[in-house]
Image (cartoon, rainbow over all chains, first blue to last red; front, side):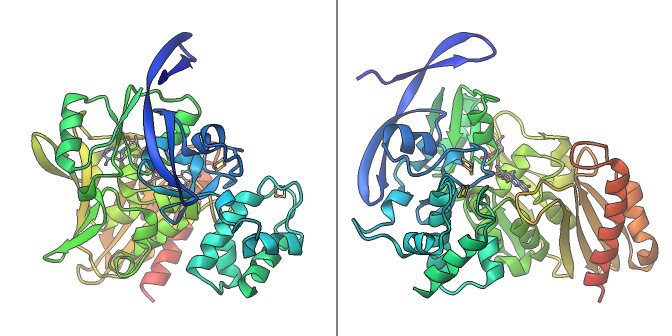
Length: 171
Length: 263
Ligand SMILES: Cc1cc2nc3c(=O)[nH]c(=O)nc-3n(C[C@H](O)[C@H](O)[C@H](O)COP(=O)(O)OP(=O)(O)OC[C@H]3O[C@@H](n4cnc5c(N)ncnc54)[C@H](O)[C@@H]3O)c2cc1C
Ligand code: FES
Ligand code: FES
């Protein structure tokens, strides 16, 4: 298999072949492999190569949180992790939260509380909320706001999202 | 483009000696933005995540050594947060939880932005930056390491290894002005130590000059100190705020910080 990545360097108009990197990582509990471009983000690898489009790409600069995943259990923006840096590590995406057909309690709470409108921010918020409740099962309102401050929602106005977090914490 | 992932400090320094143009990447919270937006295309990326010597922090004879790979999330945690409280406060204001998981002190020093939030708290505590290469290790006061806006004193074959400081154990704080509580590049910021032991006030301002600047005065000059800080800064007008506003805000921050630390 060819393992080169052709990239157009915008300012030069020249096409360069970059050497690819093979990475091996655990995604949602399963060992996976991917050939990635050296400068590629983990988000691109998850969505385009590993066929896990749950993590969303909106800003690619860490501002919106729609790409939130867990890297070795800690909340990160997948758009700011170099795919090659995830080699040998464990990633959990929103697809890995549910137990087969059984939704994760945070997912259930988002549905029940009506915290989803267009849904674009939802995967990131669900992962961030799951990370919060893992570390702090009974967060105060301030702690909730702080924990979700890296996730933007353009639709809901957040009130229903906080309802969902409270509901998930109680369930 | 390629990525090299050394597994030890020796290996990392050898790579940097052979390939001085290799661009280090730690948390990636500055560099990935450059890559994602085609603003940087380094031939070689040097992934520092697997170098154990750069991680964590330690204490040797009272001196605190903060590894360049120390994250903001780690700096916020006790017992480290109690040794460098202003740094912990500054870390809490950085970006969002996601950014604080990944962002490192070494990256903040590498970027050397006048808005870097780790810099004022380190400057008021007299931090030294430890730089390493195959040629050896050297130490520079933070004020000499920061040579201009987004410019530092790193030689091409060097890496930031750590930051060293002797915690003053004196009342200190960090404050930052911005349009919201999260995800904010400082319009201006201030770290202050009220050092009763040395009879001294020390303040460092951020986002108010080409580099983060240090201002000191005897404790007796408390009444004029806020004006002294505002006068020492050299802010400019930019998208985040005007020079006049920044000077005014620095005066207010210095006054509040003194109220907090001298109460
Ligand atoms: C959404 C968002 C919000 C942010 N908010 C803030 C904020 O509130 N306050 C703030 O100060 N910053 C903020 N930042 C900027 C960034 O998070 C910090 O500057 C952080 O400290 C960078 O660390 P890093 O490890 O991620 O750096 P990287 O991106 O890995 O590296 C940054 C630079 O330092 C160099 N470098 C890294 N490690 C070393 C080393 N050991 N030796 C030599 N060079 C090295 C790299 O080559 C690169 O040039 C924000 C960024 C984003 C994307
Ligand atoms: S896409 Fe990663 S934070 Fe917006
Ligand atoms: S539901 Fe649309 S962005 Fe949040």
